[in-house]
Amino acid sequence: MIQVIAIDDEPYSLQVLKEHCSKINFLQLQKTFTNPLEGMAYLNDKAITALFLDVKMHDISGVELAELLPSGTCIIFTTAYPDYAVKGFEVDAIDYLLKPITFSRFLKACHRLKNHFDTSKAEQVILVKNGTQIERVKTSEIYYIEATGNYLKLYTSKGMLLHRQTVKELIDTLPGVHFIRTHKSYVVNMEHISRIETHQLTIDNQQIPLSPNYRAEVWDRLGINR
Image (tube, rainbow, N blue to C red; front, side):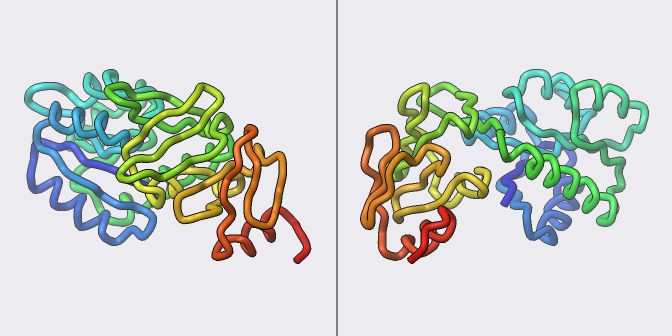
């Protein structure tokens, strides 16, 4: 599931995006904003990696705001002014939607966004909110993830990062070809497993629990005969 927000100073335009998003099963619109600065603050705080962004707004243009966003943020621009298309693509936008936005054209843009995520998942960069900072972490650098309370501990080659997100939300952003859940509180990168036992795995000299509820799937993925 791709988590997105929408920023547009026209409430009607946001309502159209809400209705379109509700029909896309791989997209979840978390929040909408008429104030671009509030939207940017939310995006940075929640480490959202994609958004629908209006180009022409009162306080700041979408292109100007895009230049302030964290590196790797995927943008689909929306506007009633086709002359702004060139400026939109100058900041590497995924797509550019001209208002009024038809559902068929919206669907095409969403599939373009999905393809972007799918093709980059083998070695993608995710944005992790670590304290007051946003860290860019390559998925190949993640050894394993531990859920603790309302936070996730990401054990990486750079050290441990504390990130506020649910396991389910993070799994949806990780490349499924490499990551698998071994326990209700643990997700591991299979590329870093050094030892496999009945009740645990070893990664980076750390023992990771392997729950009976997940053992069969883990063994199948690793090609172990049962």
